Image (cartoon, rainbow, N blue to C red; front, side, top):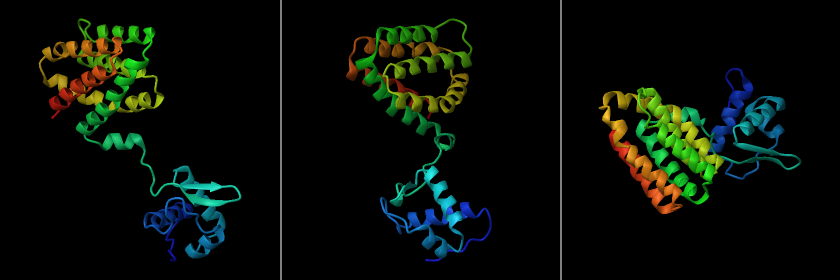
Length: 223
């Protein structure tokens, strides 16, 4: 199939053409693409443009150029930027993501936490109960507590995912607390204390259940 390129930048348009053909199933996952000369003739551009387009798709994780072997399909679509996904997601979707991440992280924290981790969790727990906190400061203290629990799981992927959620959830929490009564801040301190205690007791199942129950309550509050 021959596709026409309308305007520059040529390499980007060729990359789009190749991606459309991959999405259409012309080259399945793991399949080797035709050579640059063949693709250039099909699309109507030079080999250097095809090479640049392949490099662009390789940078997006779609293609894998292997020295001496050819270019292979490693994904059928471009993975969207994580920050863009979070900005577009509803706040409930973000909280559901937090539930999945933090429940597993809490379970691992109970298994892996060190004495230093536990001290950090306890300090963060006390910090969210400090007197005179503004709403913004309270939310930051709450995020610090949850991050301390996730960090105690000693899993860099889970921690990076949690950090990605923080900016999106922080604004929603601030808005929620400004609409709710001031007692909301104090009301959920026992739930956080139970989570810290479960981590301290090295009880993975209890820790996971406690984390899920607390965040599910948050989800209901945000509806």
